Length: 238
Image (cartoon, rainbow, N blue to C red; front, side, top):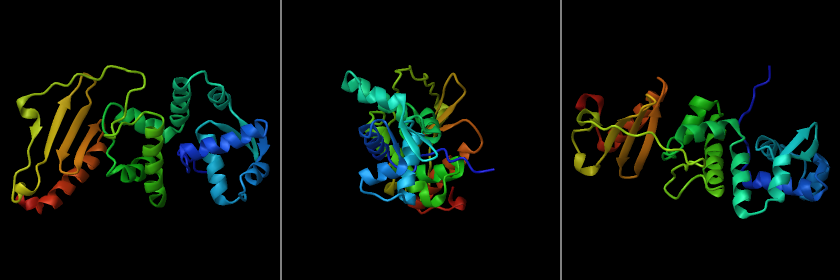
């Protein structure tokens, strides 16, 4: 059974470029005609672009016959820039992996420093592609207005965030040799949805990790190990 690839292998902006070419060709084109129009050959890289445009639901690809989707046609005839952005957000979130990442970190900062490893371990992205796919997610989310300058994912539906309950025993502090070299803290907040949100703050580090299942603790451990390395600590020092 063939493996399902649920992530785009090109950026959203490049996928829009492909869809625009198909649109200019009358909304329907063969893959070879589209490639000729762009001055490209039907190579593996070009097929990756076509696949990405398909993943973002901007075109349909039926055995090399390309057709603009209703979503892209709506985008081309949008009444305002706001509608254009809303439709591009919909296209961006059409990718299964990107939609899962958005749902997971919506309202929080994206852990950009470990996002590529997360893609490998949790979303079956090949290691050699993980950094590139991570870049496509960050770049695309920012282009469609879902990611701010602090790498926090915005809630496009303006849903209220879960209320955090803080208590005296909810803070984790790391003590040991060399604490003058790094000021790091982790804060655990409990929400009504029984989701644990752990925030790490320090030099070059401002990450919120939501813990909903056991494998999420592996990410927490990875961040803690990174802090230990900066502190020059081993497990015996704690």
